[in-house]
Every structure is written in C-alpha cells, then in structure tokens.
Image (cartoon, rainbow, N blue to C red):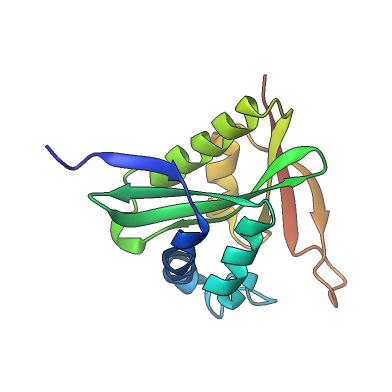
Length: 159
C-alpha cells in the first residue's frame, strides 16, 4: 500500500508545517503547565531561523502529510531533542518512539555520546515513555521565577 511512513530531515521550507504540528500536538497542555509551554510561542519564522542557524528537525509524514516532528540542537556535547510532537489523530502508532529513534540515529551518525531532553515534572506519562526508551534523569531545573523544579533533564548514553 502507499501508506508508508517516511521520516526525513526537515528544511526551512517545512517551518510552517512544523510550527502547526507543534501547536496542535502541544494544545493538550494548554493551561496544564506552569509556566506555560514555550511551544505556544513557536512561530514558522522562529523555526526557520533556528534551522538556518544549525538546529535540526525530523519530520514524520505519510502520503505527504506531516503527522509528527521533533527539533534537535547540540547542547553540552550531546544532541538535544525538543518539541517532540505527534498530531492527536496519529497517536498510538509509535510515532514518538520512531522520532526519538531517528534522533538517536542522527546523534550516532555525528559521533555524539548521548541524546538529552527536557520534560516537565508534572508530565509523568511522558517521563515514563522516555524511561522506557532508556532515558535517565540527570537533573531537575526551575524555570525563571520558580523556587522549585519544574523541568527534568533526561539523558541516554549511546553505546
């Protein structure tokens, strides 16, 4: 069948669809996160600028329709994954796991030692997903203006 899922590197030409995918995927967190997710401030222009400056992104699409994406950048010598996004209509198909695996493959191809990510303290289901993929908590941070941790940094060493 022609329903093949394709994971491919994004280009700055994908910025509009990346911004829309991130917004749709993160909508479920609106009002649930304090502080509000920075995902709600993502714009196509901002994403295009990041991609131009060396950040990366991976798109998951089926029949030319984008179903999910993830942004990447170098951070502390590791590849950082952020804005892991799967459209609500495409959830339950393992797309998040496939996108994370693609980031890990990218990191290995670049000879990087690990992949790291940030996840909110309150999003325990997301923490469990990342733990099941081999990620371990390495630190907790507070967003500006907070006196308690609001975010967890997780890391997976690539062997």
